[in-house]
Length: 409
Image (cartoon, rainbow, N blue to C red; front, side):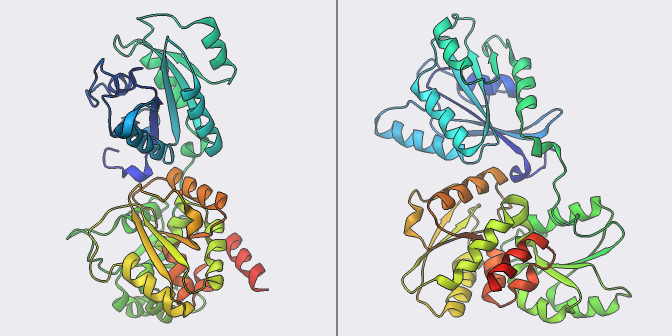
């Protein structure tokens, strides 16, 4: 479990004002000195992450944040970084102390309620004082799970762990399928895996590895091949595969080699379903038809890899989209956890497959795009549409295919 990618872990954030003991709570939960603890307010400046195993949940990531009430020019920058963390949190811990609960905690509650993010309250430093009845009434009015702790004395930490387990979103207790629900046990999937020059030598990229593991766990038969060997691979099979999954960059060649009676899709489209909302992305893709010259396109990557000369997000997608639309489009790129505050400036958002981040962050970005009334899609869907094989790439997904058919009809 220690090798579980961060994007597949439950993200638990610790939020609150300065000097309420957020870092001490993280250290107590992990039983390690992860964050610097000091009586000086504002010691935590950047988000601090710690991956660990929290049984019986399994792999999680705890994120300690700067105080939501930080002040000054630097303080406001820290607050902005804290707000960015909110976008990728699956469960939030709002920490306060015996002194109380005010507009800063209420601001956090509003943010989490807007995003439909589950949260609990920790009243820390019970060794230093007792919270007043009026402040406790404020907290109780929200009908929130509340835990009393002294992180310094390790009191209430076991109760906090139990509260975390109790309040983790239900979706994390159900199996997450990448492709195994599309391929019955004992049936065959062919995975077309070009050698990605941006992957470390000797390794496949993460979506390919995770898809292989997902199918093997389902007792499916998995055949791996490169795009140049695909035709020969299919000819050697006595029975056609149920599904061919390809890297999106090889879509056109693979589509030409795969018989029409065999379903075809890409790793990126599978991850659009796993990490986001496939139907929402399909709707966003269809808006490509409305693009005009001068429109700004936002291309987002969840990682900050070193881009090569023919990078998919910076070179290939802009080239394919420009060729398809025949328009002079303006492309802007954001990477990592950075996301522009003013989405209304863009005509379309195109997101990567999101293998390096969690579903919550992608859902947060989808929500922001919806609020700004800006269509959003992902790499694989955009490539399939630009290359004229969109309908075929949606064949395995009944609901998404019906959305496309409704628009086309």
